[in-house]
Length: 79
Image 1 (cartoon, rainbow, N blue to C red):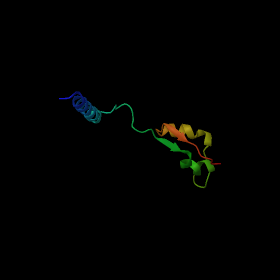
Image 2: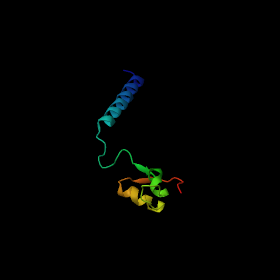
Image 3: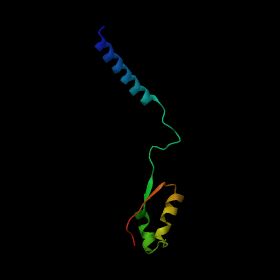
Image 4: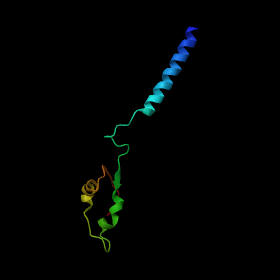
């Protein structure tokens, strides 16, 4: 066997094995795959104080999002 053939075979086998092992390895369970955020527009009726909805201060939005289990907040230009 020539050196070039040996190296080609060895490298291709190693790459295939590493690709297979990375797919078989379990993902870390304590790290979520996605981090969810909540958009401020969700509470636009409460911020505006529309009929039938209790008025909320827009500065309370991050607290409300955290209480609902979201890790981040997307702000919008509601008045």
